[in-house]
Image 1 (cartoon, helix red, strand yellow):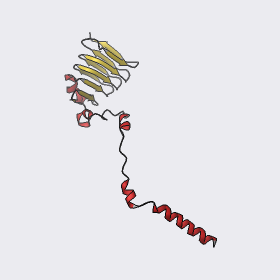
Image 2 (cartoon, helix red, strand yellow):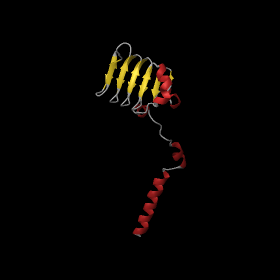
Image 3 (tube, rainbow, N blue to C red):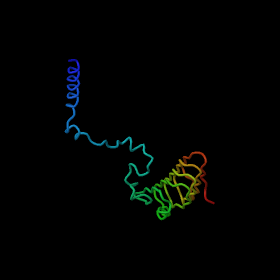
Image 4 (cartoon, rainbow, N blue to C red):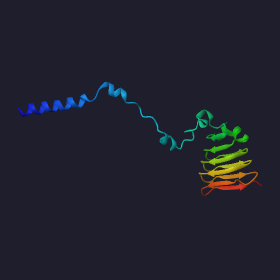
Length: 149
């Protein structure tokens, strides 16, 4: 008798638990979408700004040049751009005039015609600038910023 009672109670609890689940509940759940905060923390240069969309990388678009391939970006680098974000490692490049130069890569040699400000997050980079000394320079150790001779 006890076995029958336990079996009946188990079946009842199982039925009640499963009654809460239905096909319509399963359909109402959707795939979670990335939040603004998760996108903002990405280190990917293409996140957040359509000027940096994959098809716009290595080209100056609306005043922004995001360099991920120095060879592909060479024509755009030569012309210069308002803002250049350099995400390359171990490259030697010449850049036209820029307002802001940001370097995330390391072991680069960069000659820039003129530059307003420089931000270097990578290491072992050498930036040689022409024209006036940049007004804003933010760099970590083991980087050089020198005037052209």
